[in-house]
Length: 464
Image (cartoon, rainbow, N blue to C red):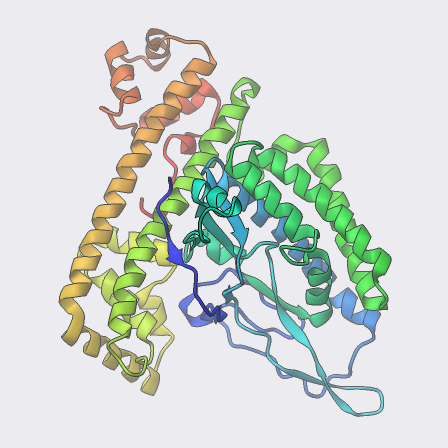
């Protein structure tokens, strides 16, 4: 069973990913310029702008609505991969994270009356928060033999979780359309239906490719159902855009499925006989990397929250100061880079964006944490680096299994592969049993032999 992660909060409150920490892949509203980019200024001053017509507003957001639909498809595929064959049971959780909220925009109508143009931080995922449970414990609960088991927020604080909880600031109408399509966990709409796909993938009943195809089909059906009951013009126009993008995607996916999956998985497959095996290898690599990251982030959060609880009031710039110290205590540049990749946070870039009083406050918080908690931070940093080393060892073992699986797909013996590689049979045996590390030159040779990406043998995740 996979390691349990962040506990489910008793009273869910929604946290916002701070833009300044570069923590969210949320997109910028191109119309009113709510920037999610920490290197640019927020531009929301549109007080003198006339309120556009419905048609004009929809046209302005047309490309972003298409992007919104595309992200939903891609992110659900990633969820299927992360849940695939975990043997866990999943439920829909309250959304507890999002990108920065849309700032207020005041426009003027034709009668020169000031009106607020309502926008929402619209989630780019159908299921932003998944709750995971041990499947046997859940079945006992369903049979009314036990109380509800203790679950956890699946992959909390990982790269995947940040993707699923990313947002785009768009007109409130788009968010309302999403609510009509998605529904809740109980009303038989899209969320309810897609949860069944997630659980089917978790038990290995369907693979991510099958789940993606079904998700697109279900989404089209739900959009059509929502259109039939839509009473407002702007809702119907948005639903038409959704349907167009979904149906275009469906046609493209059915016409060239391989190209789609290769793009989503960031791989290239030239040998059709090994395509399914390569997909399975990639699914496992992505899932294991995210599970590993969740375990590391959970360890970090436990220490961080213990430190936070010792203060009556949260120190200003606490999160950035804590991360900076944790990264600094890794000592080597390579390890610092690994932690920066895991956090998507650079101390030097962050500090360069501060000046004057803000910089002084940040430095002061770092000093306070160092004086009181440096031993704990050093110990945590050392533990995280050791854990990353174990993740690299685990991945090395998977690389050896990749070689074996591809060899079996060609029905080759170790001796035949050794001849292709121009090495001894014992070298191939050591590689497949993880006694010899697959280096980049070997990976490149294997790539040519099996007609696959060299990256399949040397995937690059946050801990590399």
